[in-house]
Length: 226
Image 1: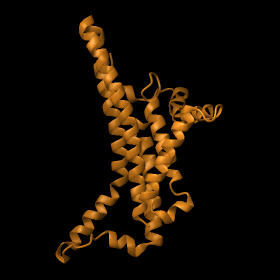
Image 2: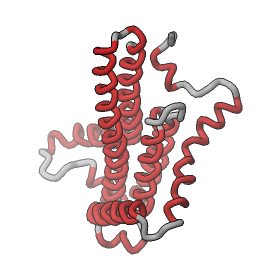
Image 3: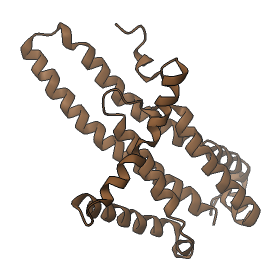
Image 4: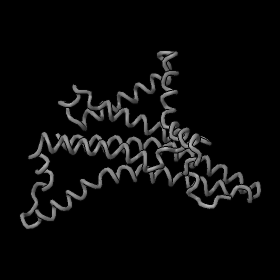
């Protein structure tokens, strides 16, 4: 019996297992080369179509002038990495790195800092104009500057917490239901298994949606500084 429900998210305490847990973040890189043995395979065509659709959407969000610089590639890579780790966390005995703020904040904070530095150094007037929305009454301008500044500063935190909280919520629900299995009879146990399968399908959808939301919001934050 677990002493703490959140202990399922704890890395192992030994130094060897601790390093192996975080190395699981790069397991997606081992899967990619296998798709190049047979080209064009169904997997390769599906993945290529997904990447092209993402590129088209990010191109719209970023604006035409940034696409020649390959600006969408970093966000497509970010989407791929987060999605791989979200899916790997659904398999048994694989560490879910995206359920930890250590990883999610390490992705969100450097992106936000780089966007802010680029914007304030190269487009200072544009960044000042963002602090006061168009049509704001003069009496409300000081308050709007404070509100916009606070909302801008909490962006990396909201990105990180959103991803980690969604990963934790689904895993906790599946853990809670799974712990009740040994004490149930066969009829209720069959219903529990069907519920677990439905939750697994839902978590697969959440894994894709959260990686997409993280990448799209990062793209929108990038487009605001230009």
